[in-house]
Length: 253
Image 1: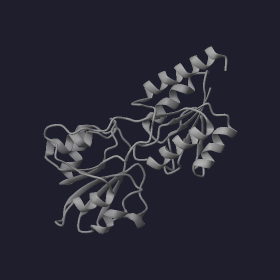
Image 2: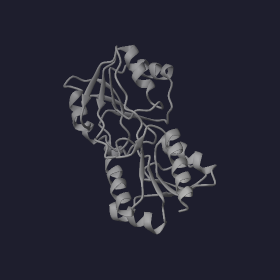
Image 3: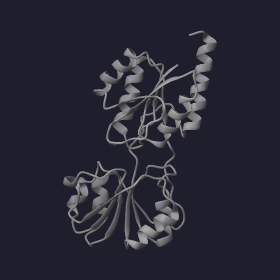
């Protein structure tokens, strides 16, 4: 069974690793190409876009893909919409791996906002020490609030042209521990954290650290998910793929 995985997440890497060891599947991992040195599993891979819905549909047909797995980031809404539309046009199933969103617990002080522009505004008019963990692609709105001191963490260094005037960058890849996050926030005298509600375990420790230190969190809410068929993790996705393979083999397709 030929499987195309739209990746860039820990779930994508996990499902790719599972399928690499299963000879019933021929899997390809597709990455957007934003990370210059991604960690690649032992399956075929490609980098770059498809050219919209029509380009992705053509790829699915030209490569006789049987199943599309959308394991992109929860905030990659456009790619997920394209995946749903292309799979319908190609006449194949599309399974989305959608990790559960984080939920606040007692002791949290979350400020929910719909987007990055609102997140920058939520920091307020008084100078703050801000830990900014929203990736390297969405920093521009914070340049409109230059009176804050920003500590920016991303997998790779952002483009300097996109940075607010008072910003320092650290490049790091999760998972992170609560102890390390607590030390970082305390050492940097952080008094506001900005993050996306990405869910998952790799970066959740910063929320526990902020809770323990009484630091407010500006939480950017997820965009609507277009998926009609979704599972919460790679293990459930693997079980679904194995069932698909079994039922296809039973039908003799």
